[in-house]
Each structure stands twice: as structure tokens, then as C-alpha cells.
Length: 448
Image 1 (spheres, rainbow, N blue to C red):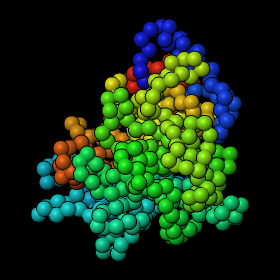
Image 2: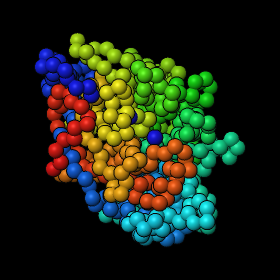
Image 3: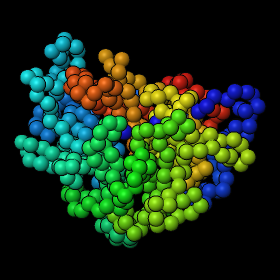
Image 4: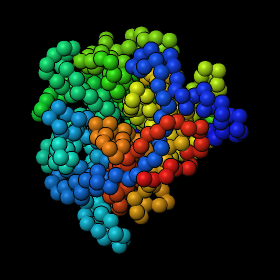
């Protein structure tokens, strides 16, 4: 599958003076010696990209065509196309409105107790002009399945694609390939409704035909006794200074009141070596070393000081978060699910840093993503993902996923089949500006 209000003028002035308005210093990896803090200054809905996903989902008629899903990571290919990674996609056409209950939105046929077809993953190919053109799956034409096949059926272990990059096949090589980071998860009892974390893998796809060549396991977490302490990498990845910086998190349930959210971790790999387990180095709090077992969180899990100013990073991150780099500043977007001051699955919060390993400043108020029509009551948003390859004069493109909160998986499925708009990504454009003193994430910036 995520800021605490200043209580006095003194606190606000202290925070501004030390943590944000003039920047921070001391970065050693992936960033300059100093940078300026950034936060969401304003935002607006991007109706064009949102409508394109809705169009593609509504018009698909052939078996195996994407009509909904989440994940929503993107990779810009060398020829100008964009590869979108989809988790748990529904691979079945929708029917135009009204649905059998008379509601005015597209729906999926569940009459007679049938279950619409879905898979654990798929890829969507978008043209350079921004039009979604095809869905890549595994299986057969009449029985489509996951593009990245399940690890096993019994016990059920599947793969979710979480981030991708284009890099040389090997360091210095002219040929380029797509590397896709995958999460291995196993079916488990409650509270593990979305699977028990097992491992991080890297898949290699050829270009330009996007053929799956290999899948290599780079971090096996199965031996970690507590599933909630297992770290999966690939929530987001950023290229800088010849390295690919890969962020991950320990995204299990069962948090304590003092640490209700996930903690963010960081690894880095030289360009061209993402599929080599021995090339990975993990941040241990002081430097980079080869053992994933010694990794220390870069965000979440404690409080401390930044240059003498009090810092509270117990809010942590959601299990799905995103990091982008703009003008030398690293900005992290996450659902503000931490407590007790977090706003739950309704608002996006931000952190910023001058280097990927931090120190990270925040959280600061972001915005409340809008819901589609006819979705009030149980719809939730999650997985904010930045897409800097679509940057333009209108700002940073950011997606978020939609789903329905219910008491059972059957109820969730019934709702997303009844209203197809509930299980499709939506998009906004963000303008990032200099960081101001923190405020509650419940207050959205003015739209532009």
C-alpha cells in the first residue's frame, strides 16, 4: 500500500530559522552542501491525465485489458514512451452507466456471483503523445495473468512491481534496459490483508520490445523473524551522481502508539548494476555497507535534533511513498497516516532534505487529494507517486490511488466493481515553494 502545528510564536520562529527558510547544510551523498527547503505551495487537478486512464479503462474490450488497479509508478523509455506499472489490476472490460443499481458510473459485471478477472501485476504502455495504447500481461489471450509471474501458487507468493529505471545493461554499456524493482509478498492471515513481506527482486526488460529477461533476488527478508521488521526496497528510486538511490520501508501492521507508521530505509547502487545483489550498499546511519541487516532508518522511528532544533520524525511514512529531487532538494511525499496528529488516509504530507539519507525535515502540510464523484463514505486515497518525467510549466505531476475501506475483502471488491472509478489513479499538479513553518495537513493550499 502514511506536521505538527507550531504551538507558539517561539516554536514557529525556531523551526523557520533552523530547519527551513534558509536551507540546511552538511550533505555528503546525492546532494549539495546546502539547499533550500521545499513544500507544496499550491496544487490543481490534472484532468487530462486522469481522463486518459479513465478513457483507457472504459474503452478496453479485449480480455486482458486494464480497467483498474493501483501501484501507478512510471518509467520514461528512451523512445519517448512511458511504461506504467500496475499492481493488482482488473483485466476485464467495464460496462457503461447506469449500473444495475441505477448509479451513473461505469461498473463491472458480477451478476450470477461471477468474479471479474484480475492479476497481481501488469504493465501499461503510453505513447510519446500521452495516449495509453496496450496492456502487457502474462498467461494466454483468453486467460491473462501476471506479467511478472507469481513465485508460487501454494503457498501463494506474488510479485508487485514498485519502481523502475532505465540504465545501461552493465556499467558503461551503450545498450540500455529497464530494471523493475519487485516486492515478493505471501498470503497471510489478518492483519496481513495485503500480504506478508518476503523479499526485494529486480527484473530486467529488454528494449524496445519490453521482453522479460531475468528476475534476480537482491534482498531476502524471509529469515527476519518479525514480519513487521522486514524491509522491502523500491517504494521509490532516484538517480543522482552516478548512483540509483532506492528507498524502502518496513510496512507491516501492528505498530505501537509511539510508532504507528512505517520507517523509511535507503540503499544505493552504481548505475548499470541494479540487478547485481553484491553491488547494493545500505545506509546504516553513518555510512554505506553491504549488509541489509545493518540498515538503519533514515526517517521515522524516533526523535532527535537538527542543528540544535527539536525534530519529531515519529510520524514516519506510509508503506508506499515517493521521493523526487528538485533544484538539489530531495522531497518526500507520503500519506499522513501517523498519529496522534496524523490525518489518516486523507492528506498527503511532505518532508525535505539536502541528501537522500537526510536529515529529513518535516512533516509539512501537503494537500487533501480530491475524490471522484459518488465515492463519499468509504473511499480512501493512498500511494502518492511523483512523476518528474512529466514535469512542465504547470508543475510536478503526482498520482494517487483510490480504493474502498470495508470490513472484508469481499465488500471492498463489491464496491470497486460497482463503481469502476474507485480503483483507478487520479492526478494532480504540484507547485513546490520555499518551506514555511509547519501547519496541520488538514489545511490544503489554495488551488491555482
